[in-house]
Image 1 (cartoon, one colour):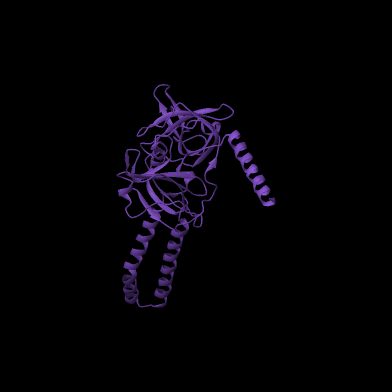
Image 2 (cartoon, rainbow, N blue to C red):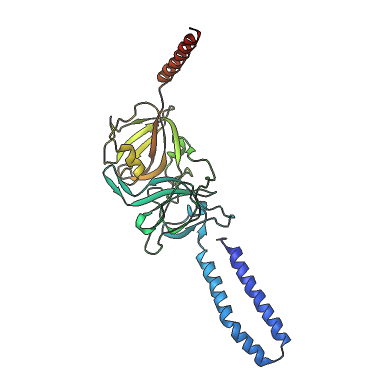
Length: 321
């Protein structure tokens, strides 16, 4: 761990300098009794400074970046901050679920991605554990808690031994890289690595898939239910689609209307999770959508263009008349 070593070193140097100045003064004063009394008087100050230095070193020992945290064992106490990178604190990039009622569910948790310059993590906790803070895209944070990947999603959550703590920094910050990350089905349909997160390297990141078709959900979204289907790209690459409405309010918002499932191509944002299937005894990569946008059919686009052209011709003819 390299975090805040510079600050700890500064404190140690400060103490060394203070002790040296004391030694100089003592050597100049040849009265042994005075020297003893002087050291006795500053002893409490030295004790406090040493204690503070040790406490600070211990408190920041696990401060780290997303890239490093992703390699830690489940149950590790972590602090997600700027990792000594000069103020590059994690920035909230998307909200996955927020407290409230939707699609017949009562959501009591916050879940949102926060990314630094090295990667991205999911922060998942009961709203009651961090009162007074409402996450928003663009917020910078320092987060401490329990690293506990869940279904391939790299989460910092709460535990008895490692309670969640979220410290707000500032708002309106631009993410360090483009959000969402445009990707493909072959890139993310790869299962987990040895650290229980996606081999794609895109765990805990808001992703975008373009020009995919949905199948297996039926004609309409089912209200108040998780739904499993599939998505397929134009090259016939497919993967599982999981509408996780019971945990994520963004999924609940998609299904809440019970509307028609798109039959044509769509663009969708979301994230990858990895579910252990007891049927196949293997890890199945799933795409969890947070938004689905229908792509206009080429015929419809052509008709719109033709309509606009006709309207322009009519306008010109009226002007001449």
